[in-house]
Image 1 (tube, rainbow over the protein chains, first blue to last red):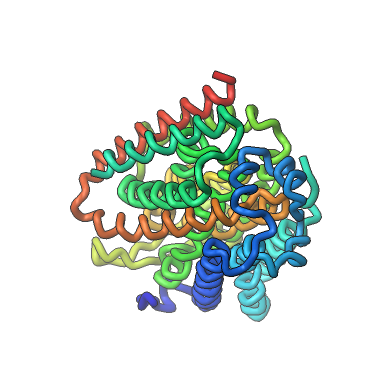
Image 2 (cartoon, one colour):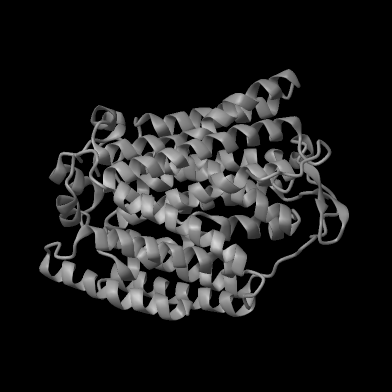
Length: 142
Length: 307
């Protein structure tokens, strides 16, 4: 895509490595999101919650909506991935997950350079993001 | 033209919303909402670029306040993903050019992303009227900030503080406009870290993105050059909004039919906005954006207070 004018003087090795993974990851996530949304919205795949039901219940808070449509919390949506609406979560999860992969990719470079403080910051960030993604904090209702 | 299109959408969708809310039954076909959301997001994407703000800060109060019948939980979930998608797309170029700085971003993003989880959980746990009222107050605060805050292209940082020195937070970038290399460092890092606790909570709670707060803290408080502040702020959103987005996803507060048209609309609108940037009167557009936020903030406040 874009031809980034980068120079080691301005962007470190770690920064360029991070950017390369991020560039690939967001494009994959974005393309999948568009394709899966097309399959959903044009009715190629059946939805767990019909469009008519959805339009009736989207006025409700998230927890009440989930009860009304028997929707999943946490990672339970994976069991519904064959349904058009929850298939969209795959692309969205890639967009939300790419940052952890970028951190994991760059972490060895900081380790190699003996940068202990930034290694610790990166490990802490990975833990924070994995905790957020795990559903331990996010599952359940209000 | 943009104003007219926006007004038409406002009138049309506000009418639909009133109809749905008053009858309690979804009488408008779902695809009308999806199409209206896409068009609205597209227009917001154009206005956001021309007004120099992130898409999320316009999206949440306007879509959540005026136009659509969606519950605020889903609007905030979509708003976070709108801000996240924009940051992910911009991140690679900003990092490779050296405008965004990883060493500056990482410590601040760690604090802000942990705080954003707390903010997201608070936002989903608090009663809607409380969140709506807080959102209104926050948006009005943003209006005041946008109206009054100055920017410093190259702040004077006489001496880096000891924390930023220990963390080796400094950098060099090439300013094409000036055709020269700019060497920079930062100060007041501990206060900056503290501010990012508050910014993270607000980003997670309201789904606004947080560029409106990141840039003043990085630029005016910590003394990073304006271009580095804007670029690093944009990149940081890709980390901070990620943690909050997971909470919204796990709580079921993300609906594909709301999130995906919003993301596509804003991203396409941003591309058009960039093309219009040269021709537009930026100062006028910024005033329009401030006016829109003033209306949206007032509306959110009134809704939250039950008026």
